[in-house]
Length: 108
Image (cartoon, rainbow, N blue to C red):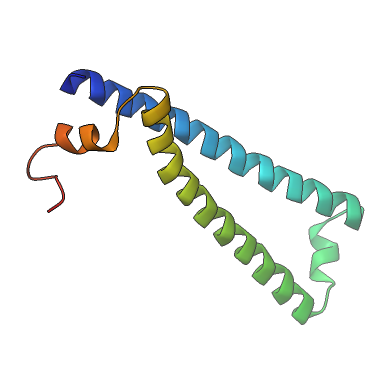
C-alpha cells in the first residue's frame, strides 16, 4: 500500500472511529439522563437546590465519576477501534503503519 493511500485510510479510520465514539458517548449519557428523569419524576433546579448539601455533593461526585469513567472508556475505544478499522477495513497492518511514518516519528 502506498504512503498516500495509507494516509487516506488512516484519516478515514479516524473519522469512522471518532463518529462511533461520539455517538456511543452521547447515547450512553442520554440513556442515563432518561433513566434519572423517569425515576425522579420532574427534575428542576429548584428541587435540586432544596436538597441537603451532602446529597448535592454526592450527586455531583457520582456525575463526575460517571463522566470520567466514560471518558476513559471512549479513549480506550478510540485507540483500539482505530487500529481495528485500519486492520479489518483497509488491510493496513501495524507494521505498515509504523513504516509509513517519517523516521523521526517512528518509535525507537
